[in-house]
Length: 437
Image (cartoon, rainbow, N blue to C red; front, side, top):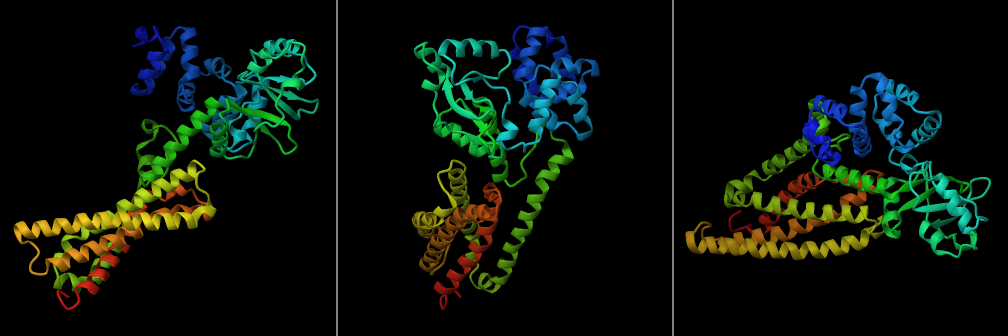
């Protein structure tokens, strides 16, 4: 493996997930230095920490000092509390100071994502002076997509792209070409909001300002890509009915994985017990018309599926900023209509199925028309309710200050299972009264 890996660092990265910790350490140690540097910088923070913890103490400094302050902060945050100071001590003085500053912010806020190393210019500089000044800064800054014009107190006065610097007349000053109506983030802004800013305005980097509009750092598009991937993974895991994982799947310990999944499973199981309770409540109806029991899975699964669809669509719309709390009534009206139409479609399919089976196999007795009508009306009610409940649950959670993704599809399905049974047997008791009941 090591001999092959020396040919291309991408080959190492592709095979990295398939290797054990011991194999990773052995492979990394065997790489030529120039390839090892590339591999190290392309690994995520979890993989970097794994390597650091397996290295001899004397080698750690070499690799930690290759990291930018924001990357070093990510790695240190993942380390156990007793090891953090030891890792910080391996950094050079400037990087250590910058990293400690970043660690003061929440990990999922703009302050925790930003890099304190950015390209700066003075507004009174000419184009030639600004370009020469940026050339001297290039080895130290994370990116030169944009240059930031600051005053003596580090207040951000304007932003100028590198392209505009080269395109402008060399006699002009930075103040003549910089944009003063720039988009910016605050240090406590949630990372999802920052990601939307970058996506909406198609930025390559966004400045992070404090309350006095002093520039503290920048969040670059590569940081946003990582945020989008992280948030998407978290939402998908929550939609699946479990706690979000805080590390790659293969790095989660057995009992930690059980803990992440058992909680929601237990809650959903208790919820499903209510389904059995509801079935017991309608025991007499089932005894009189056993045919009702045949359609229980059909009814409750249709309600759960429609609710899962609705909650997934609304959660995604919320994440993209397409829907806000104040839009709840519009969503109610929209989903109520959609749920009714979807229910009618399924009702037509269900009734047709009953009529066909009756025509061929005589399965449902003399009152098959009543059975078909009961199933059809129940499907309309259950699907409409499921759609409405699934669409509203994310709004309730957001109003309570919780993550809407917690309105997971299994949770909605469990909720609708119970109510679906109540709707089904209530409709049956009305339509079948005097006939089968």
